[in-house]
Structure formats: C-alpha cells, structure tokens
Length: 206
Ligand SMILES: N[C@@H](CCC(=O)N[C@@H](CS)C(=O)NCC(=O)O)C(=O)O
Image (cartoon, rainbow, N blue to C red; front, side, top):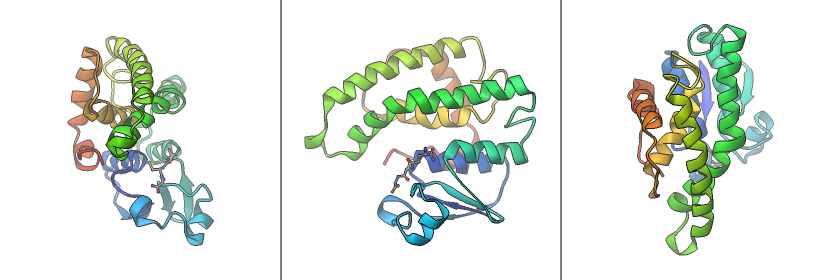
C-alpha cells in the first residue's frame, strides 16, 4: 500500500492526502516532522536527503516534493481527469502549480509562520504587512483569472486547484486585512466543499 510520511497540519502533506482522496487511493500515513521528529533520522534521510515532509513510498518508488507527488499520483491514477491528458491543458495546470511555488507561497509562508507559529512578542509585523500587500496583489491577478475560468486550469477541477486551495485556506484564516476577491472567493467556496478538502485540509490552522 502507498505510504505517506508527514504530519497532518503540514500544507504540503495536505496536498498529497487530498490528492489521494480525489483518486480514492488507500494509503498508510506515518507522522513525521516538527514535534514527531522522524524526518531527521538517518533512515528517513536515506529515503529523502532533503529531510522534509511529505515523502511517499509507492511499491518501492520513493518520491519527495509535494507537487511532484501530486502530479505523479494524478498522472498514474487520474490521467484525463485530475491530471489533464492533452499537452496544453496539462501545461496550463502545471503553470499554475509552478506559479504557486515560485511566487505565491513565498509571500504566504512568512505571513502564516509569523501569525500562527510565532509568539506575539516575537512577531515582525512589518514583514507580515509587506508580504500581505504582495499577496493581495498576486491574488487580485488570480481573481481576474477566475473571473474568466471556473477553476485554475479551465472548466474542470484539476491537480492545479489543490495547492491553491490549501493556500487559500490560510489566506482566509489568518488575521489580516483582505481585499474583496469575489471570483477567488467563489472558486474557494466550490473547491473547499469537496470531501477530500473537508477531510484533510479544513482543520483550523496550527
Ligand atoms: N518544497 C517542498 C517543501 C516541503 C516542506 O517545506 N515541508 C515542511 C512542512 S510543510 C517540513 O518538512 N518542515 C519540517 C518539519 O515539519 O519538521 C514540498 O513541496 O514538498
């Protein structure tokens, strides 16, 4: 059976758990990361020298990096649905996943870490505000895109919606000022109602 290492409050682990739910894939999950440790042991480092979660073992095939895992599982079990089969549609889904990694997450991560995982007296609120403003700008761009498309990669839910929705859950649940983003909000309401999101990604932020 597919094995997944990673604590359930990790955004990157949540992407993989939700992907499995979309694909009806059974899995065994092993707690790892933060208070659970494991990811710094020599045994774990032998499987994932990067020392982070998630990591999967699919019948002896070891893979780390959450988006590589989401793409692998979607391509293996959901080609033509979760992973678009047509090259341009697949590239469109890939593009939005890349944009998440290279652009959006760089600004969501400090806002999340400072407001949720840093004691109040140690919070750098200037850093929060700088990143909040950048995020608001990028999400305004996403909002315009979602004004023209139902989902990030077109008319159907695909793997590219998964990272964006777990990020949106943080955007909507950290105590910050948010501009009105009606299309982004409409999209999030739709994708966050999916059972896989509800089961694995909807918990309060910790
Ligand atoms: N780019 C990597 C980032 C992985 C990552 O940063 N994982 C975090 C959790 S979200 C981690 O392992 N942190 C160390 C820990 O939990 O101990 C991915 O997408 O998988």
